[in-house]
Image (cartoon, rainbow, N blue to C red; front, side, top):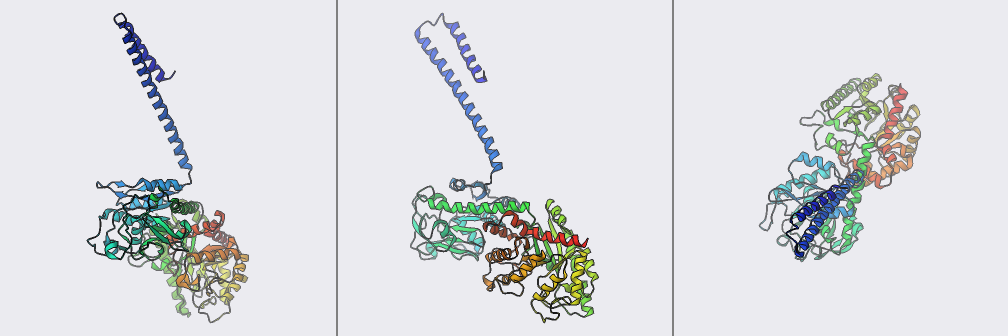
Length: 638
């Protein structure tokens, strides 16, 4: 018998005792009827309490099961920006939350705070972001003085959202801007706004409708060949309108996607280079009316967020390495700090944002005179640079460590740090003395590029060559053999085609191209022919596709991440998945729209997933292939 039934019987017994006490004086029917009603109320009251307890118990069980389900979910986390209340609190319309839930995501409200560190850590957990509507944006943010027609602004919200967007862009988080959100993204990326449409341009459209939000007040025209056209269809679409500010000048990298009848920008996008789309209307409200197509916008964001989430999870499992950056040329400069998010392309914060586990820091030396004195001076310069690199790594030992072997990289990643390998760019670095190779190896050097832009004592170059040696020089053949002996990888980027073929004849172990692309897609002397790709595969080596624009397309100004992906695809098709990697050449000329810096490298993984590459294949491209070669070279030396 449960507690509730016992309590009920107690109530009845108590009332029965009361009845016996007064029975002799209360003999009329009226009392009995009243008493019967009293008992009925008591029983009914206790029944209601029992039902309430049961219902709450069921709710608790449901909550417990929901918590278990959330731990197992693969649904992406979608951040939602919020407005501010007069007391400084946070507020947002439930329509944004419901749209994310309906699209299959988990909404995360990001409080309107000024703590940059807290926002940074929050953004790091997100798979997607929606910037919401609200009040006007202060024109001082885009270097204009306010006009009288400017509406209500909230400087604290402006600052919060600008910081939030900047951090999301840095991490390549898929983003959707709605109304004010569309405008502020444009401002952050370098665009400008009309402070008040009616007073600053001709317009035939009333952009502040009186109708409820679920009703459309005017049409927008979606441009063909845009991503938005693929999402909701090109041509006319009815939309709502609740704004008087609007995009004036589109930020660099954003492309027009839709306009109003008066020519006002109604939508833009950054696809395929960046996962950003912005719309001036409120699709989250339209979907509550008769506009089901607008739900496609949220579903598109969710699909992009799912892929981004998968890419992040994959990087947690695999080893990722960029085999060539020229960042050490900045080490030692006044004011430069490798641990700060500097303007250069590769530094520790950007490496972390790009989900990279390791990089090869290139000790670069330009080709100089080849007399004995100049050659010895080159050795001294490189020794100094190697010590500078080691010192910079030691200075930030809480964030990175020097790596010498594949096992070191695994160990360093497990500690939450970045592995720093060292390479030498240009064999001029050894002067005329083979013994310098062992000295460099002992200082941590794990590959050497045989030449740079000009011929040297080792070989002919691919660029400004006079075909001095017709490939490897006699000294160069000794260099390759000595590198095999000490366990240093031979890098054939920058060398002439004849040198490439000579190296494959001499080496006993696989070789690498640390930063080269494919000639079939771009006729650069720095790129490999299909015959070279096949030969490199037969050797067991790896070509690391470079992100320099002039190595990706014959029209360098038009180069984007899509060109980079085509080079990866071609190299995989010709050489095979076991012989392709990534070598950015950041801080040495590398960087194209969509992959400008180390923080953008996660974009390559996203693109590979979208192209249908398996997780195993992506793991090979990002580091598995390189580590295989390194292991083989070091094993042969032992």
